[in-house]
Length: 343
Image (cartoon, rainbow, N blue to C red; front, side, top):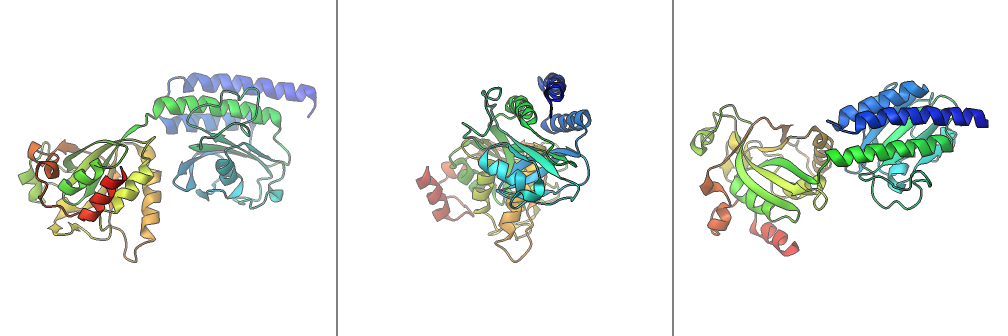
């Protein structure tokens, strides 16, 4: 590319970055931000495919994009996207056929650039590559494919890394590390006690989730006619206890193949479930259940739905096992002691 062409492309990128900065300055929703960014980038430069992959456990999951149908899941360290994620660096590929382990979603893709996006921006993005001095793990990658060979150069890399920093700032403003999830695991006495002991859990409170009437009492929920499940609202610090790890620990306390029953407790109120208030949690939940299913020959029956209602249980249910150390608990004592000893 000659000097004039490089200068024109740089100017085009700067105008694009100004536009993105405007709608990323006060973002309302992460998915809509990524969708608008992909659309603007794709149509500004006429790329063949432009989009984002979000980190979910040990794989990348397809997010907002522009272009033809794409691969939906990419394992950690696989292909250009998985390698950029693993190595926390931008990768420019002049010819995708020459990249070891390239994942061919389409033969029309000829060259590619993948830029990792981190939870905090790289302050040196204007002067040096993301290849240097990055230790944090990305939460997403930006993937751009061209139908031509050798499309991407240092201008693309530097400008797209500036874009990554803009999105990192937006991500940080949207994603407080203090998160909420609602877990139904049978009798909430033991589930609340167990989860409250996990390092990173700020508080856990017993309640009733996803039923059909307002302000249910325990007696109403007990009839199994209200649709509510005994559920624990968990507020946790995701920087200490990621959702994937929290779910892994929760799964130790349940039989995920038992429908409407845990230990001696039988009824729809004792069903297992994961109820989320943030749609961005869903890929992590699905990935965690997929891994869990590998351990069972029977299908999992853990309910996964958005949270539609949650009401605190009566005071005498809160921290029941702290008030009554010899009270009933369906979770094995050795599992509870294991968590206590690991704190």
